[in-house]
Length: 281
Image 1 (spheres, rainbow, N blue to C red):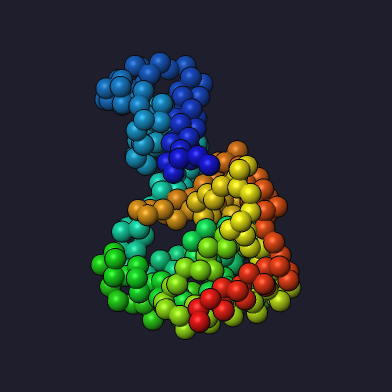
Image 2: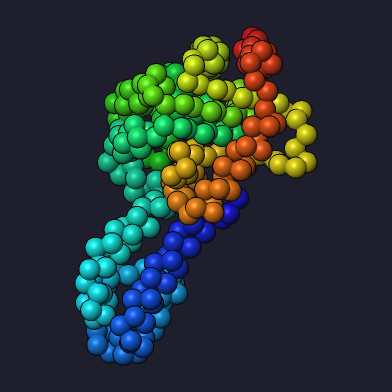
């Protein structure tokens, strides 16, 4: 996998290349363009190299100076997308956990094929309300957020309706996920029991990667959600990362396929889940 910020930086470089192409098409040097806008030449250079992100006004001024006003709105839209690729949790959750949960509903609704890999937690589409409550309560306390956990839990549970719609879910879990005690024994027992029930849904495939699987070729990686072939979301300690570069999406898709080959399904997966339930005592 690439570093957390590589997708953002590559997108910035791609935007810079487009700005350079527009400038060259207009027959302008960087110095001439900068002088026409009252900038230092280094400012134009940083935009083109991706070292600095242009503001919306910068983009519109650039296009105007190059006689390419028709390109401006597309560039502004691209820049807004880049800024949304790496969002710190404190910004995403500034209005509370309920708002953060609601912000991804449109993406869930339009996605037809979900591919989810989790090395740490049972993922959202197959979580119980009690498990969600335990997770969000911990997040609220650690990040010092407003207490809207019940409302946020309600939104996340309602989001799970997509499991019963025209969507498919391929979920891969490390076996260790079954053993991490989130919310205590009773909560985990209920969550694991629900996981067994979810395996029976026609839209859901759940694979478990056994702890004794040979990981010489591919060890556990960061958890991720792959939405169709459109984008990947990765939850970091500090931020929410969105990956949209095609070659990176292909890497995540390939990694998911390789992880899927390590997993067990059906009766073998049920046996691992049942063993985890029994270990709760």
